[in-house]
Length: 84
Image 1 (cartoon, rainbow, N blue to C red):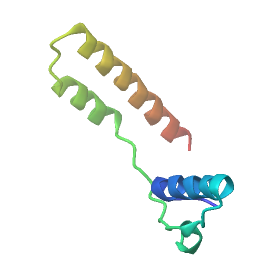
Image 2: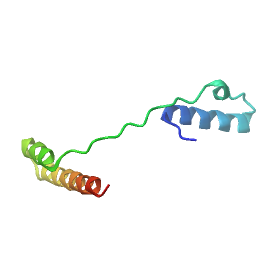
Image 3: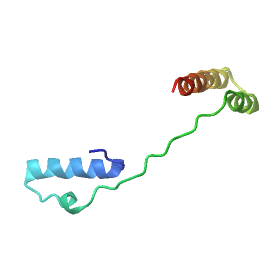
């Protein structure tokens, strides 16, 4: 069973624990699990990533390191999407 809502999972877990520990009734048993449509996320094109990184002003070396890390992450995702 796939849970689409993290809050639902947290509440179910909490009340299951409370039921085990304190014999409390679990109100989440009567709450239907939300269903969500899976949405395919389109990756950025390599030129879009390059434009975004060039548009970022760098004021510190840390900013450059962060941009470099995200640039590499986006590049990996772009290459991964080409393999599909």
